[in-house]
Amino acid sequence: MTYEEAAAYIEGIPRFTKKHDLSYVADFLARLGNPGADSQVIHVAGTNGKGSVCAYMRAVLLAMGKRTGFFTSPHLIRLNERIVIGDDEIGDEEFLAVFRQVKETVDGMAEEGLSHPSYFEFLFGMAMLAFGRAGAEYIILETGLGGRLDATSAVPHPAVTVITSISLDHTAYLGNTVEEIAAEKAGIIREGVPVVFDGTDPRAAKVIEEQAARLHAACRKLGKNAYEIREITRKHIAFSRGSAYDRNDLWTISGCGVYQAMNASLALTALEILFPEAGERDPAVWKKALASVVWEGRMEEIRPGIFLDGAHNPGAAQAFADTLEALGEESPVLLFSAVSDKEYEKIADILCGRVKAGLYIITQIQDARGVPARELGRIFRERTDSPVLVEPDPARALAAAVSNRRGRRIYCLGSLYLIGELKRILTEQGDCVQRRLKDRC
Figure 1 (spheres, one colour):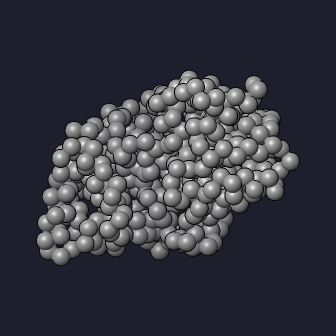
Figure 2 (cartoon, rainbow, N blue to C red):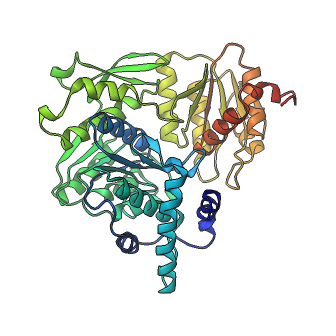
């Protein structure tokens, strides 16, 4: 079997299986030999910011010389992005090797009458196997959906858990209130295992604190005073941490998303729990590692003046608006699309009410769940007096944004599926994007 055949098999899994309970996933991992059982696991849940927190922790751990594995989702272009060993996504040869081993195990389960792992469960098994083969000392697990019933929660004894900001998303699965969603995210908390969390929403904080108390888990809440942004540009943010002792000690992160200061603070706090002795921590090493992180699709400047941000729910849209406000951005060009299971009307309310773009360009994700561009265009036109251009083809939409920018910055957001498509377009076509509008590419 080739890499391409293996990837195609995985992509076809949703057609013939469903999500299972944690006892099934635990048995699946046991059949794989419980890979990663001797590793220190950092388990991360939340609505927004999970991937960024994980990326910050991974960078610091690698800078400390630790062998590290990172399981994340979704991918933007290739499945390999979900399994990161050290500082690199898994190579095709290793991907195929762990695929074959997992597939052999799954075939044996089928002979016993057991159902096939879901798409996410299969990839999770591959990731844990890859991390075990690589001898990872630390494994960072980002939940896929929720926390309490997520496949990653089948790992029984994490070293620390982290819960990022919580807002309304995936309400059909997780609940219709912040409190209900927080309860699902708090499901990653384990007996006696420390938890670090974003406590800026008191409704979510109360739920998390109560769950931590029930499980005798030491609780570190980061509130609005956990950090102070001291400088923000379109290239970086400098911030100090909450205590008076740290006030003049600046940390720098790349990019301009104001929400990243909280994510970096969560990552640093979790790492301080893992390495409690001051002698284990070299501030200069940690600062350099933190500053080096570029997390794709999160206020990422993919080309000069063109930014990609995966804001795909109302909470993320508010954070995006906060960032543009902090930057003093005026009349940008916004390129937007969404999938049907997101609250895209609420997102439109925010983008039209708080951002005031000079031009909105509406496109359509090339997926069955993509909201028709015509419908999205109608929604935006009802909410803004600014021009709204509808272009269903993402490549042509991007080309239209470039040709109509008139010195303005372009921000592309609404879905990580859109971000993945745009990254692929830019990779494959480069400078031809603008000319494609005129059918020259």
